Image 1 (cartoon, one colour):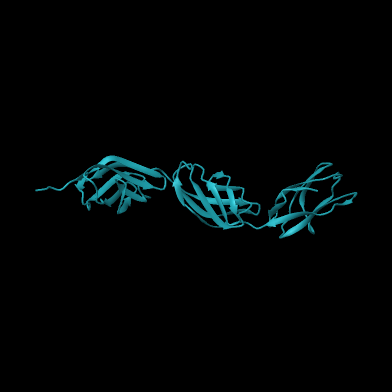
Image 2 (image 1 turned 180 degrees about the vertical axis):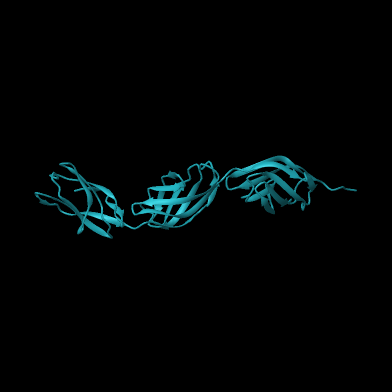
Length: 248
């Protein structure tokens, strides 16, 4: 007598479909010793019911005027516990993959980022991966994981817009580096890296539109300046010029 799904939350509330024969006139469905609610006789071969609360593995039986069936196992699963996200921020467009760690994740069917959800890939009971769906707007959203045991909330993920590069001042300095510059643009508040011709520079975030940095040593000539945040990279093409020192 198959039952689908054959697992559900310890708190009950899982609607199951029981398939068999001679099910007409079903009077009761028991999960162990507890009666199910919402018992509906769909057909002579099918009954639906809502599981009561429980724990562990119990036998599900169906009672009709003709008797009681043999038990079919049903597994109670606890609600998941999430301990963290591998990345807590990313582009508003989504598309990046994050890892959710915790316990009780082996039956995960959905991960929601705010109002949008995605189907995860189960790695183990303690780890799932999911491709982040697009966000409605930049900003933090709650993250929830739904499993056979229920839904657990408590984590936060921040959608971030890709930065833009506006201007840099001053626009030139010595090849030895050490020039303090100010970079302006948009979405710079979560800047993770500033680079001159690919060489990382020490930097400080002033606000969402301003970053200060100190140029690393470079080769004479105009170089690209990049500003990177979790959503992407903005490039100022040839924005800074390294000037060679005088020679005698």
